[in-house]
Length: 285
Ligand code: KIV
Image (tube, rainbow, N blue to C red):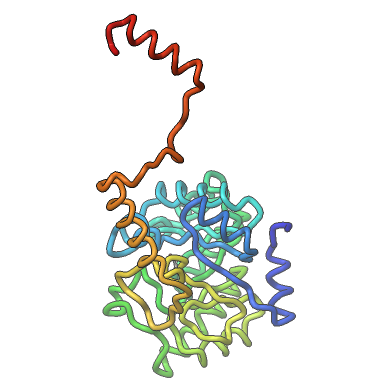
């Protein structure tokens, strides 16, 4: 199937067809996602939590994001990929933001970048867009600023904050964002954003009204046990399955049940005879 473009996503919004968006951090998961027809993949800085073992996304670097984005691109050559801008890769200056966004495109092979923030980042969004790079906005519960919210808390649950989030969305659209990810807000707020914006509105923990849905792939597979947000639906329990398989491997290696002959390379009879002869000749038999 051909890789989808922003025109396809606009058309999907117009027709009310939901956009399927999922994170991936490595080539194998990206292969699986491409095989089942996921529309858009996010290489999120959530890789800091999922694969790098940090307890937040803040330590993730540009080098990390380029490496993981390139791996996902190799696994999913025909899927639209969004590379996430890590903390402090776009806040210090517009020049640095353009340069770093360019790295995700040139070195990571992403089709677009995502950065967090509303009205305060519109100059940056405009500049990156004018440099020819597609920008996805990210508003609501933006993890890089969780400390400013007093922790990982749903946003827009009071009327004034909700209006501010709607205004942030409109400002991002006006600045040229091709799409906006809305995280951790009530469905009533996402619905207004979806109706007011002409660009696709994707949601994670933002209810059904959005034009598409994102989940962290390890969350929906039941692989990430540390924390389960309210909005995560687990489609399986891979953590349990993986641990059971690992435990069985440990047990079989220790008990000598693995490997059996089935998993061993054989030697042709002639080579085995010759091997024996040589061992004897060398005094090694
Ligand atoms: O990094 C990420 O995966 C994200 C999601 C939490 C929305 O930005």
